Image 1 (cartoon, chains in turn purple, green):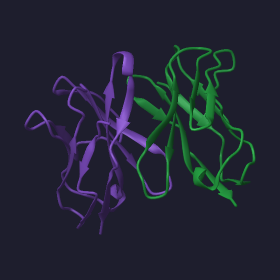
Image 2 (tube, chains in turn purple, green):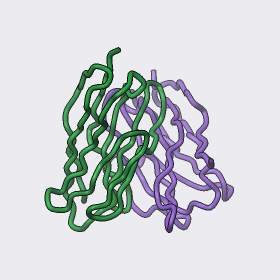
Image 3 (spheres, each protein chain N blue to C red):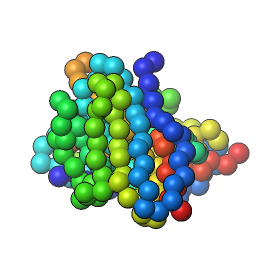
Length: 114
Length: 109
């Protein structure tokens, strides 16, 4: 079964450093998403991406965050200057439309900011 | 935008007990509805979905029926196992998934 692949599985970074979280979407999916889950809390929407541009973003997704699809396959989330409160699990998801409509999530990247 | 409210946990059950987790949604239209499950230390796995009113989603013994009249999508399982211990999330689709707060279920042998 096709998978959404996320790397790394765990990243530890110092406060103020930049991090890039990577996702390889399912190849024929066109809609991409990033979510985060602070430990023990709900899953929160960050941003959606379609046709090489952001289609929607949440209040969480401020100027410190950016997304891009640098090479037509990877889909990345960059946090420019990490804060302690950015520590969370970050999930990439893709959506398939049509008869197999649904969202598929990656296994996540656990980001720890120290 | 859409929002989802689900039953607060944690829920602790004995094996073979009946499980129900309530979920209600608010939306301007009729969004597709989902249940996702998160096992300890893992990501989000689709459990079941329903795309229109009166649809019943089912998987692994779990069921949920899309009730337009009550704007609900309650999750049920008739006989739980220890392996069903997990966090369950209800979600609605409004061009993105909006999740409920999650319900932690613990099944004891």
